[in-house]
Length: 335
Image (cartoon, rainbow, N blue to C red; front, side):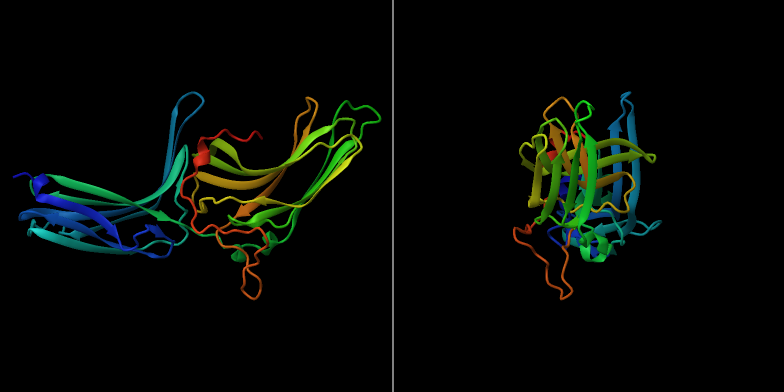
């Protein structure tokens, strides 16, 4: 009789059914085997893997691949090297496993050209040479707590630019722009408070001004950035500013949508950065003027000295955060 019919079930079951783990926690569960008949086996091998992979094509269509490991832990749940086979009786057999996840693991990340993934593999080796395999993914979330980051992230963050528009004739002055964000760090569900003053001293009408929250993903291999993609996640726009006029943004609120919690510290192949771009679009064929204000996207929000959440109006923390990024298929933001 072949083993295929003997093996009724071969499962990897985690004690934590939502499959979500933090660095430093224990990953525990069991490998469950259900058999119909007596089955001689050589061993049950268990392998826990955490890896970062980048895979893409270069402009010359060369395949580029790079990989790094965060966990590579092997154990035998049954059988000893050099010893003979063990006969498993009909019925259900449960083999427990437990290991502490290292601190400093990067978060699970699934991107277009690379990923950070964690999974367990089990292999049951039969005496007759058959090996039965199964694997199960688990998710690692490495949180960023704004309260443990440099305190400057709780302070307002500002930026100025002076830019000449139009033909540089004597009477055409610059466009002056001052932009301030209420903080340097946020979590999904909060709003970014934007204050700005735009003085149009040029002879060109400004068509619009816009604030855009963007996510930039960089894929690296052998310490070189191979691909960089920026996408817009949310934006606010205001109307035209004629020559000689002034426009003010008075603490306008830009909502941070639910984002996968992605802390890629510890990963050297993929980098994620968040920015608020303030864009001034002139009416003529002039290029847009962009101010880049880098921000930190965290998991846990700021608290007051009393320990309460410093929640402002308009804040709506999502009860769950996504794992996938559906916007990766959308067109990129032009820098």
